[in-house]
View (cartoon, rainbow, N blue to C red):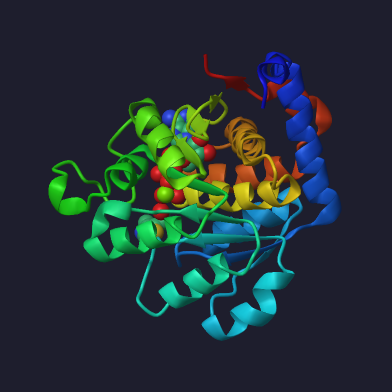
Length: 280
Ligand SMILES: Nc1ncnc2c1ncn2[C@@H]1O[C@H](COP(=O)(O)OP(=O)(O)OP(=O)(O)O)[C@@H](O)[C@H]1O
Ligand SMILES: Cc1ncsc1CCO
Ligand SMILES: [Mg+2]
């Protein structure tokens, strides 16, 4: 992206990009292979379906050679990692499709950290984690070294992980997303911020996993610009949360209303409410 192009990227430009990518997903229904954790399978599949994409939770190593090359994108999430799933993850990551990594609780153990670092070396288009996950990956450290480790939840604000995300993006040649109250997306040089969403989204398990699945669908529509694709997916998901919150009573009904809102988003809602900007 050159400087001239950056200057044209105002709210209206982002709103149009988000709408055109959501419209492309709805029109083309990209097939997204998900090798994801057992907690997230339902919400990730429902979020993909409500966006217009076509989810497939296929994780057998024996199916990867036939199935993965036919997918528009691959989503790999280590949330309930076990030794027998890691070979499928490796194989799917190497199948030549754009793919996205969710390093859930990367610092939980040495095994998980090593798996995340190995997957990171297999060229994901995007890595999306919460602040604690991105800080841990950037410092390549497992739980033993962190006194405030909180498992799959973050014990840091997303802003605390911007520099770590930039370093990780540069060292891994990938786009890194730190999610949180504000989501940050970086390739190591520029940083884009997304301010959609509501705090209650943290109280629904696997919203992070679900938005990473949505990022994979959006990346399949725009593989040459993963920053734009990721920012638009995060903004659309956050906007669905905002609209869902207008009818929700708590986390369980927010989950339902978020999925409904995502399904019914229209051009006016998207172009007027997307909050994406380039961080100076
Ligand atoms: N305080 C907040 N305000 C608004 N949106 C938020 C807030 N916290 C998180 N979100 C949104 O919730 C979604 C999940 O982000 P989060 O950082 O909680 O992921 P996570 O910790 O990986 O979640 P999980 O592990 O449960 O999947 C993102 O879309 C993010 O923008
Ligand atoms: C709760 C939980 N445990 C492993 S994965 C997961 C979903 C949120 O990341
Ligand atoms: Mg997570």
